[in-house]
Image (cartoon, rainbow, N blue to C red; front, side, top):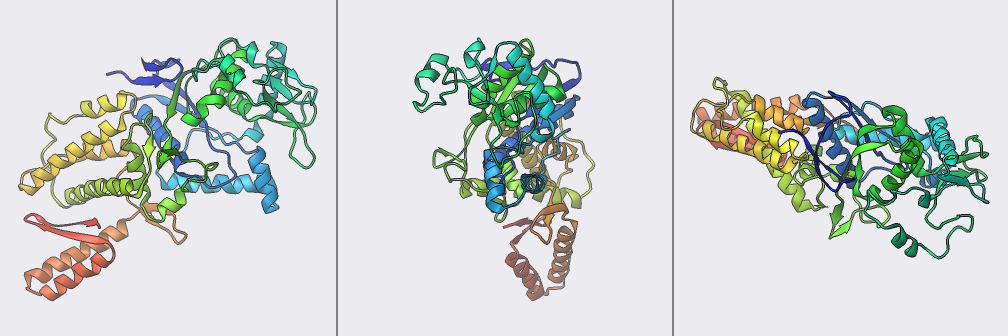
Length: 462
């Protein structure tokens, strides 16, 4: 089955045919670096990380670009609040972002450009828009995009331009020719960072940043542009208007959007004050639990966040780790039977990255392996279980360092537990049940549950 993507621009699934055979150019809107990331950000990053992994696994040479917005009103305000330079703030927040993403097992993109290092590209695009009659310098000194000059405006979001006009605010900027027009270049204000331009000192508007950076690194036409559903309008709509007007109608060919994360049926966001930072969640749950939780729902569907849902994800993950531990302890001398093959997993992933269905295949395989081990039969080669899980970024136990962050394989912990299991088995054999019970109870205090069966003792996190 060929890869099928739901293209938001067309409103339907389409076969993915890259612009250049064997290569994929993918741009994903990154974060504005003024604060720590929340679970909504985690969903975007994990979703597109899995897409990146699958495209690479499918044999594509992927150029994955994900930007940082490192100058905007929120950043300026936060830097002033902390009485530090904005670059000090953004450097700090980018480093903290990477800590979060590394903990969640997200691969680094090919490149992570910053807006502040791409001013020439933005200025060139704005000059082109003015030349083509799609932008103008307002009386206030800002450069604005003339929305009605772009015939296809609203195609991505399905919004009607006249409805947008009637719904616009009354207290509009008097310097705008039309209430729908948006800023490309902001005239400098006292005390704010600024850059030189043909229109005087200033800084870019948010929307022009991604149009310019994506085209700078992937060309005027590229394969995939992605981001959260909240960016579909106006950010992505405005990106299309800018880039297509500047590049003679060329821009991204497939648009992918992940759904919202909800709490009590309301979108999680900083503006609503109902968000949980990734760090808050990881104080209670292993990062792979959060990853499993996110991948358990199709990326385009809403995701309802709750402790109970995370607990379900944790229980499933524990089952996979238990199987991995059991397989490690026994000889593997029979290949997996034909009824579970690569095909079923690939079919799910090629169907618009259907991770819930792909996980169902992982658990089906997991169940069959355990069934055979419980019956004392030869078991399967576990390569597929590990391969499938790796494609989803799972089954890579990590440990916590002194600062509470996750790094490296937790081999020391696993060895310590397994050594105690061996010691307990020896104690039971010599009928030292007091010692055997003491080992079991000591592990239980640490959240480690032992399970005895005819084939031996296994452990899991309680």
